[in-house]
Length: 193
Image 1 (cartoon, one colour):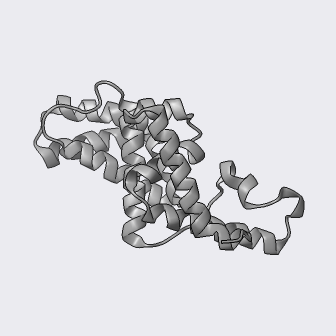
Image 2 (image 1 turned 90 degrees about the vertical axis):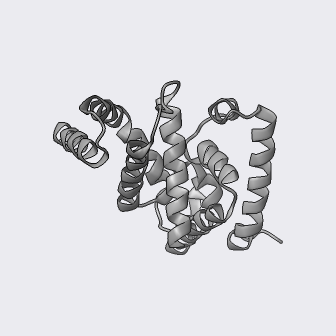
């Protein structure tokens, strides 16, 4: 199935862009090597398999339309991951829709596992919705760093390296983003304002 999808992508890219088959083959190789990374990053942000597929298509179509040199020479995985996160945030902002999904890394903050009542479970879903909505309102850099840290599990040093920032800058942005999220979702988790 994946091989067939790669061939279709190569042919479609060559026809639409008029670029040589070698460029299309290179793009197909990049797709084959990294599409799962893009899909999983997009799913973690959007919480929807359908939206993650849309993001996957968007990221690779943008890449196919690029003129000039490839931005992927140094770190294709890093570039594509960032592109997926940003495209997913763009999608969320444009639709103004929050979808639900499991945010395992944030679960300890969202619900006490010892009290898994139906009311508590519904509250967790609502809090997840609030987190996604709040992230969609933040600056792209703040949302991206938060997602990389808490959804994707990267360390602050890794994030700094990926984004070309200092560790101190990442720390400050994470602190401010957590503060903003507390203000946004505090009422939903019973925190005093």
